[in-house]
Length: 464
Image (cartoon, rainbow, N blue to C red; front, top):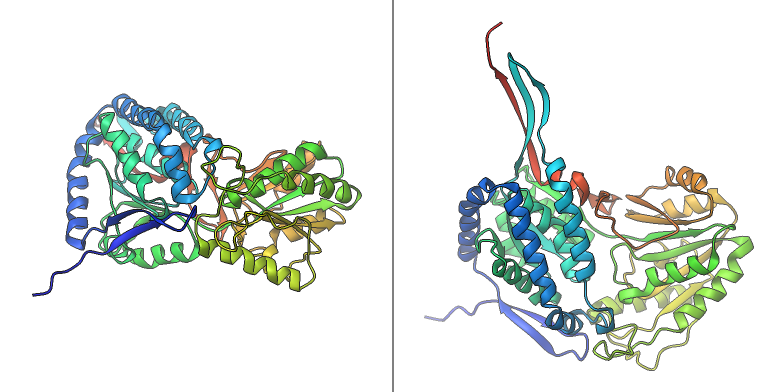
């Protein structure tokens, strides 16, 4: 009888194309067993006092922070972010602290009447078991958005991480276990797409959070069809910036180009297109090109490197294809190729002008170190162009007039409106999107509401 060889997930390092890590996927039976253990453990976890759950979860995050010396170079090997940036622990800690502080009020009952005759109240109960399918670009920050509030709210959590950051989920779960979170309450699973879809279709989860591609989000929705499972989906983005004539141009150029090129452009809310008012267009472009030209593409393990490789060759191929198509259609490139650009995962940063919305690079997600810049005549043209995309995650407005920005924000189809900043998640605000960017919302009190369900209590205490 032939022996069945288990399927293996392999993380191919973008640094040199070698296999950095590999793990066997769970069989369907083993995955179902993990679900059963999590469900059995969840009721006891939810019964613990809220303060105890908060303390254990925050201790888990602190323990993860203590692993930074190992985690930072590990991330560089897995997805290419330069070690000089030190990982994600600052943001992880900030989001955890905010969500912990919000928990008591967000999860508190809404008491309609508490009298001698009636108790009428709405309480919040955990969804039960939450599946978190996390992406590779910010493997800890994106996971913590749901893991932390889900556990604090009394859910058990299963974490399935992207193959490109294969070890991130394993490390995160180990940190939480070492801090005292029960092993069955928070588990890391190595799953293939088929087993994941099967678990969702079998109603294994009360809630599924997915961060990734639009195609991946559609696959999650198909798997959940008819199960009425709650879904949170953060999918594609093509986030715009708009620089008005009265903007602080130095701050706008510094921030928008950093938002476009940091992490090799692989940011969920990274800036992918910039619209500039005609009177300041030339000045802004000059500043932007100088900033981008100062980046150093190279080995992410080298402290001097400010721009590492993209996470995988196939992602780099998408960027080059879009850039080549734009150039063929008349776009102008403003930066020379870097000596480190190998035609593979290492991609030169680039600023393009002469672009328009007939070009894919101005409408479809690029997710790489490239940004297109267009001149606009007025606010109406800028709003029309910002909305001319199938995505809507964030929009960054640059002006000294907050009222003008707020009025424009009301016209932009987006989840978040930034004024004089970009590429940042405020954990006290709802992180959400519209159109093909997805559905639902993470962080803030609304994040807790999505990870729990309301239950009404209508108790007659005494007869009239």
